[in-house]
Length: 292
Image (tube, rainbow, N blue to C red):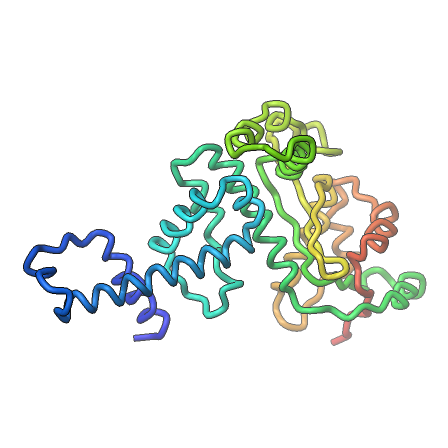
């Protein structure tokens, strides 16, 4: 049996205490082996939940601030019961948390799940391995064919598609809090369902897509702090090509030329995008593809 399987079984046993109904014969003395065993497991259970709550409150800081400590702790406890901790690094815990929230019977579960996904991607961006920057390589764009060049993106680069305008919702709540520092959880709950935001149209996208209410986000990490912003559908498609290229087989690279070929129907302009990407510190370097 693998360590992960053993850990899963152990956590299952720990949380099964919630469902156990001890008979009087089991608890007639506090010194019985059974009682000592259960007491020890309960101590571990409380410690595990507390540690998980602290870790997830950091990873999902926005969700934590919107629902409050009590509701968040309940979510964490239920999450651990369903998804046993399989990571040794507390910072990696929570991959399934957004999906888990979406299926919980809590107010505004859908928008909270979308915010949780953004929280998680930002957290992962800040933990991403550093990428060396060399902007002098931009000169290669003048000297080489686009089909021989690749773009190397900065640490933590990621794009995300959402059915909710999470950036607008978060900004609206932050703005309301600045105006009223006594904003209650009930007030936040009402702001989460603000129809003016939930019915907002995606920014700068093709008219044909507005009926789907899809929103596109870029997450990246300039100066070691994660940022996000809403982007157009065209830019999302362009960046998705580069994000997907990370999973290509060894030795394969996406070239600028081939990426542009795949965006011919999107009216994407690399001439407009490139200066902005450089200013945002989204690009770390340009490289020449290795010849076979």
